[in-house]
Length: 127
Length: 298
Image 1: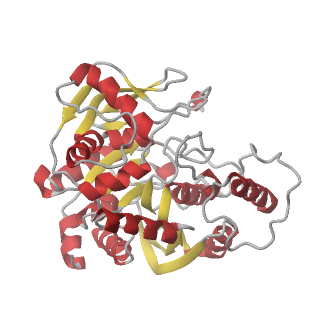
Image 2 (image 1 turned 180 degrees about the horizontal axis):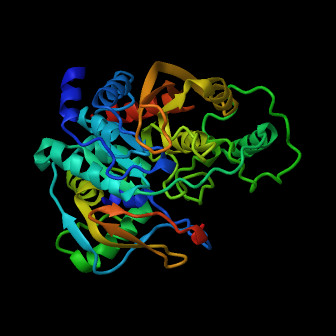
């Protein structure tokens, strides 16, 4: 699961107010690829994502994997250097959560991620 | 890419469900149909390079992977059957075994649409919500294509969330709130196009087709392609029009539903099916804006 997808997901378990952004529990198994930078895709997606959620999850993951995950500007810069675009590409598309848990910020409900597939299904009594 | 090439690439995949579940109405999608749908969407610019697409109820991933094969930038497959998604993931690996084979970003998500509430009469609630959307300056393209929304009196429906609430109301870009339709965990507007071959809502699942359609419309910012029984066409067209959306019947076809479950008495059964394309309001202006931005960048 890429951080792009993480940005679009939220919790709706009973008792949730906002359920966003989901945390990623420490110790999760990540993989970091290096795919060719798709500049147009990055520019398009930057308009669609919740920027502050992207920055905060990136900062969280950097606490454990600083060497693999680039730092993002705290707010979206007016002009984008090529290097910054490459960093956005890395964070949005190359960092993948393979195994671990997404955590609802309101209720602490954990959503397991197994082999890269997040399981967002709720039990009957959680709806 | 030619139809036969696409079809042949898909035909090596496992399209059958490992453990078909009757309440989900799981039937395999043929390579031919998946390829044809992908090319139809591609022709209209709804998928392909610079587009993102979500397959709602993707099963073993035939439609999603057909979209990936025509070089759609981002493809998301959503289904509630873990085993089916595992097959989809394996199919994906078979198709693109070498990472270099594709630049497409493919994501699989296990999630379930909630059972639809009872369908109720909607027109006044709808218009009320619509009005509020306009006042807030949200709900893009508001007000087009509707005539009789004149109710301003009460706000009491704001939280009522009937199944037919105008989905455009929920299209907000920042500040996500928990939407009340079938799949609250995915943000509104998160992809350009949604393709869906939903359950037809025949097996203890009445209204499920409409729930899929409504969710698809909320998630897409450009277009929705959805399969429905031809017998439901007048109702669906009317419903979409009441949301202010344009519907086009892209194709009429026969689904050959094979004998897969015990209750099937006949060997197979033909069902008349439409492929509908729903144009999301405001997608055109949005598009121009984006293309201008891209030109400016270049």
